[in-house]
Image (cartoon, rainbow, N blue to C red; front, side, top):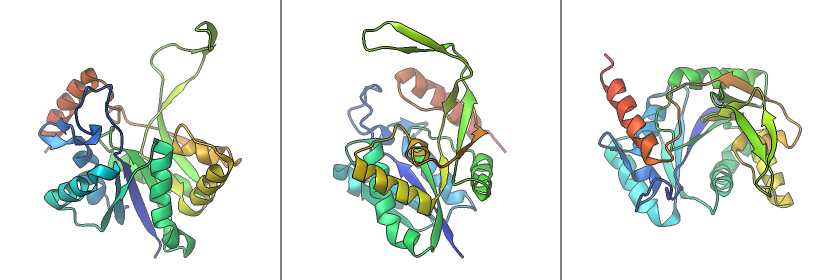
Length: 235
């Protein structure tokens, strides 16, 4: 039976968070930020294996963290690249033999900076792959969005905008092919879905989860502490 892999991207520096260490290792309610999503995917019945992508200098630290968390599913720690796009490319290339021989047919790509993974949403994203090669979660933007120009002037308002989240789900074969094409053509995507979309393939958009927000600033970190405490009180 073909498997599903979860790729957790944790190679970000966390400069806007003011962290002296990699963002993924900043504690959230006593646990490294990335530990929350690693444990979620380990508990997810739809995920068979986990890849953690960290800065090259943090590989040993990533392995130590996974050992400490006691993950039960097969896992691998691989070095990230200069950008998020490069990091996910490294992860896909690590999985390439299994993707090509069809022993692995689906991948989830997730940002460690979004620690709270909704497993019901994961199931919905994977089910959507029956009809499309990719599926992503998003929420309607709550603020009025505008686009600007290089001279700092307003260009236009953006009606009906949605804020994209992760994890994003994909059929593994089309995504690997799209990433290799992007590498050959010098393209770097803003997120994983953009790599697939540029090849003309459709990506389904599903309603995401309010808790799946991204930690970027100290204020976001405070919000995450509150969410973590709420989740800990669940029966």
